[in-house]
Length: 392
Ligand SMILES: Cc1ncc(COP(=O)(O)O)c(C=O)c1O
Image (cartoon, rainbow, N blue to C red; front, side, top):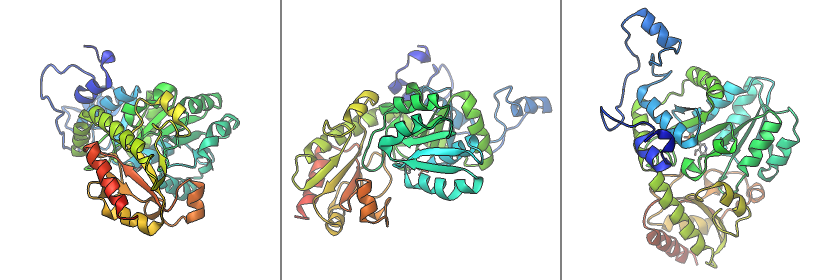
């Protein structure tokens, strides 16, 4: 079967090529350097003519085979895998934006990205301007040639807002701006932004792609032309993925498609039931028809994901008690693993921002973010209901 006909779940398990001989599983090429017969052979590799590997900071066969898989899932020509999501973002931004140029960013993005943008990029003469997520499209469309790059996330953390991916891509094209999405919450199973016109698709592969909370990794995918600049920067910045971690990432991706089906199912099941519970003020889940961006989510997502947030009808102290009472959901940050996790943004990712700033982001002190895993949905619901019983 030609790889163009392979569906995502087949790509996840078997990649893009028919395997006719050799190991069934991608070998771990745990080496820093590669040996050549002579200088000509080495030069051909250094110049990129032979496709050979020279030094693992530049490329590695284990990592490369996973990169090909992710490109096939995202529908891009190229993917680069790095040692973390942050390494992927910093390599992309520093590879593409020069001092004196500007970035437009949605204001609902991961806190680590905000810190990179605010603390590190100004050292390089790069300024980042933030706009409300709901105003991003209009702002970009009216920006002329002001920005080099437009950065956004969808779904967003922790209130699961949805940005219209195609509208951003169209506005970016019209203004000659490079569009870049952090697609971590979506996963390449639930959304494929490059197919909707986005130039660069980034993931913290620590989350759904890896899927087992046992690696830290990042991916960045796009056209060969744009990725050439990203790869050059990544090579110099040195956030290189270790081959063993690439092996674990590949092993995780084999079950990505079935895991996402279960994440999608479990989160929707919980969202629908929790919505009816009087002890919960709000349920943020894009799969609920009452979600303000449900129509956009329906249009651009194949599933609504495993992330959901609930706002309890109580104060911060009791919210802490609620999370501490959970028995199946683990009390931890991060997301996207097989195990369900619960965290309070006001005490973790959004700590110290104060009630007013939180309210502007539609986050309350009693908001709990749930990364819904792949356990039995009934056990997860029972866990949440029992914890709610402890605070009323
Ligand atoms: C949406 C999102 N983007 C990027 C990152 C950064 O990824 P990493 O921790 O793999 O560097 C995270 C980490 O939590 C995240 O949640």
